[in-house]
Amino acid sequence: MPSQERFAKGPIALFECMQQIPCNPCADACPRGAITVKEINDCPSLNEELCNGCGVCMTHCPGLSIFVVDYTYGKDAALVKIPYEFSPLPEAKTVVDALNRQGQWIGTAQVIRVQTSPNKTNIIWLSVPRELAMEVRSIRLRKQSGNMSSP
Ligand code: SF4
Ligand code: SF4
Image (cartoon, rainbow, N blue to C red; front, side, top):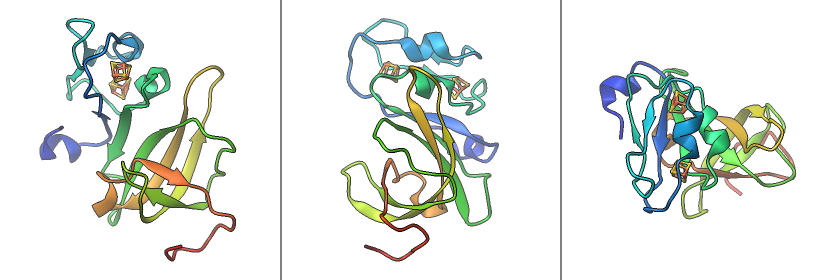
């Protein structure tokens, strides 16, 4: 978990990769050399001063285990980038249901950007209430966008 001082500086990657499995494409993908996987079964460790929250590692992670959180995004909102492999993709500017790690509804989020690249994991940029930044880890599309109330 990054320090509060680091969160205050801008976006940073969060690794929710808890299982010791033979995997390390995140480390190979990071253009800043911020990720270390000492032994192939180790969980990755992050040099938080080298990470700039670009999200490149997210697009290479087969476990969908990496997120980016930016508390400097706004006064009341934080930016959360999540990996997303469902179809259809949401559209930018739409309001979606924000889900926690258990898939439970915890609020609403606005899609800021949909980042796609061939043969890589899609990344959804979300604006969420600051207090939900460490809880929102997935989304559910709504049939009608623009409604900020609970379902
Ligand atoms: S977000 Fe970017 S800089 Fe940070 S660990 Fe991932 S690839 Fe490296
Ligand atoms: S690529 Fe993803 S699953 Fe693999 S070690 Fe890195 S964070 Fe964990």
